[in-house]
Length: 253
Image (tube, rainbow, N blue to C red):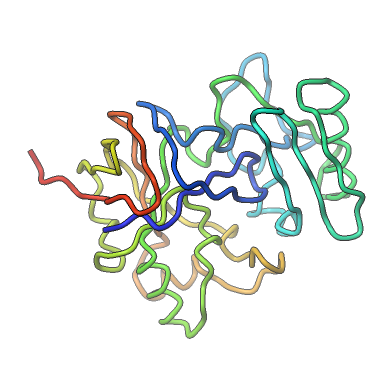
C-alpha cells in the first residue's frame, strides 16, 4: 500500500493543507493538525483548563456547512492565519497578538452570523489538539474505500469529505476496518491502529460548493451495516512519512 496524500487541518473545520512529508512524534498527531478552533459563543471550552469537547462546541462542518466556503491558510513560521471567502474582505491575522486573534474571531463571527451562537473565540492551547476524538492520532483512509462507496451510489465522492490525515492506495476496500488492534509501518513510523472512524453529517458537505449534497453516513449503513470509514492510528515510534512511502500492516506478534 502507498501513501498518496498527507493532509493537516490547522483550524478545525477549515481548509486542508497538503504536505509532501512530515515528521511524526510518539503520541502525537500531524504537526499543527487541529491546532486551532473557533469556539462557539456558548462553548464551555476553557483555555485555562483545557479538556476535550464534542465538535459542536466549535465551528465545524457537521453543524456549519457554510464554513467549507472559507479558504484559510496558516503559516507556522510567521504565526499568521489568512481567511478569505466570497463577498468578504480577506484577513491576514497575526496570531501572536491579541489584536490579530480578535480580528480573526470577529471575521469568523461575521461570516457565520447566527450560527456562531454569539461571539466566537479563536482557541489555542499548547499541546492541545481540537480533534474529533480525545486521543491524539492520525486518521487513515483507503482511497479504494471512498471509491467503492461512491460507486455503490453512482457518485464520485471527493475523499476530502472525510478529512483524513493519510490517504493510501492499494489493498481491498474497507479492509482497514479490520486492522483495529494491529500495528502498521507508515514510512519510518510505527503505529497502533486502535479505533474505527464513525462518520457524521460533516461528510455530507461538498468541500467545493459548501452544500450538503450527499449522505455518506446513511449510505454506509445501507451498504455495510455501519457508519465507519477509515481508522485511527496512534504513533508508537516516530519517524518521517512522505507521499509515496509504504503503509505496511505488521503481522500479529
